[in-house]
Amino acid sequence: MKVALTNLVKRFANSDRAAVNELNLVINEGELAVLLGPSGCGKTTTLRMIAGLEQPDSGRIAIAERDITDLAPKDRRVAMVFQNFSMYPTMNVYDNIAFPLHAVKMKRGEIDRTVREVAALVNIDHLLERSVRQVSGGEAQRVALARAMVRRPEVFLMDEPLSNLDAKLRAQLRTEIKRLHQDTGATFVFVTHDQEEAMTLGDKIIVMNKGDIQQVGSPHEVFFAPQNAFVASFVGTPSMNMFEGMVSADDTAGYRVLLPGFELTLPARFHNGLAKMTGNRVIWGIRPEAVRLVAAPGENTVGGEVELVEALGSRDLIFVRAAEQLFGVIVDAQASLAVGAPCHLHFPGAQMHLFAADSERSLQNNLPPSVPP
Ligand code: ATP
Image (cartoon, rainbow, N blue to C red; front, side, top):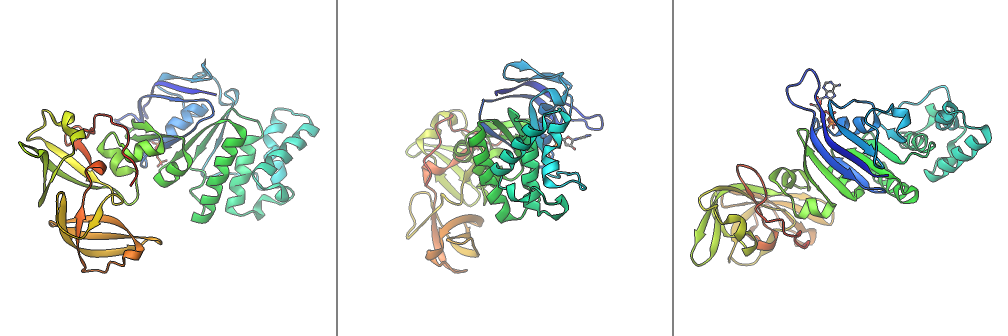
């Protein structure tokens, strides 16, 4: 079912800024949409308004073109899974999953079939008789998923359901949520502040900050073509190298950006965006994965020295001191670069990002995302 939010506003009494500010968003039928942003940006409030647990001050919410803004939560055909899921401790797993079905007076045989079917889908069919006091954190989240699924909701709302789990279990459950999404064909709205989780799960990522949507796009779009400096710095681990500088026009080289201690020639795709920007402040950025180590100095290259090495497994994150700045660079672990090693960093024009310093908007003219390195 399609979910449409129109001019949604929520302001809490004790705050001078809106928790959710004129939010407009369409999540298409069958999509897995992820609301991503730092703590306090309004993700949970948005989700709770869709669930009907929070009433908006203004704006409308529609599911499948039907306005549900004033409907009670139970009439919305949505199910919500929370981070801190509470179960009925005196009941076993089976009864916890069956509980919402007793509440709607479903027949016993049908309840039994539904509970077993759903439990099998989330791989807990062997735990049905077990007391919920005796299940692990990961199993408890599966019980939560199963309990949300039994009423066959058309929209699943998930508020950081995996954040209490260890890294391995999280990755495993993420895959299962993706599979569940494919198997059910339902619309999912998933909230997280973890950009890696958002990237691996989402078809559509909605990046939020301070109650506003910053960008809506595929994982590739928000990573390779961030529309503003906030999205550029929030999405991606390790974060983008970003420096503030000034645009200068050069008769022979076109536009250049003067950065603290170094300067670079900007590729032609920025030229339209820079037409009236000479002398203006900009934020220039490049991702650690996009910086190249080269053997000799050249165009858009700075020389420096390795200051720190962090092993990431097959790759290393090295920090290079060059032109008095510190650059994060991802290199193949085989490169075996040691602290103190001299090196030259090259910044390929195709991978550069540029934002106006005042508005923080991208100066890239909405070009399609550049190809991954
Ligand atoms: P987190 O990841 O920490 O859960 P979030 O992005 O989900 O953050 P929200 O919980 O939606 O953010 O909160 C948005 C803003 O609204 C925050 O500034 C928060 O302090 C405020 N807020 C949320 N719920 C309430 C409430 N019941 N009363 C007052 N203020 C609230």
